Image (cartoon, rainbow, N blue to C red):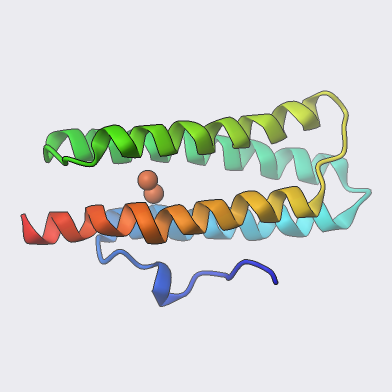
Length: 131
Ligand SMILES: [Fe+2]
Ligand SMILES: [Fe+2]
């Protein structure tokens, strides 16, 4: 089974967060296409770079928003972000070391990110609505 493209299931209802997540899903799609290409190393490296900078920008921005809104789940969310960021950096380091980043590894991480959106980001968006 492959992870989904953007669907309404992934929408949190918060426009800023959703815009970021839509871009993330688009980058992941691009990354998966590059990872299945096999011989297009430069394309994969570029996608990984875009992926890394998006994630390393998105996570702190979500955390700042949570801090500003005194979200009680912030500490747990930070831990989840750190674990996901580590996995992203692991792929980048693998690529930088000249090793092959496999489609299955990208897919595994994509699934983890989608689960994070559904199970961790959505409750925050709900918290924002409820106030
Ligand atoms: Fe998050
Ligand atoms: Fe997020």
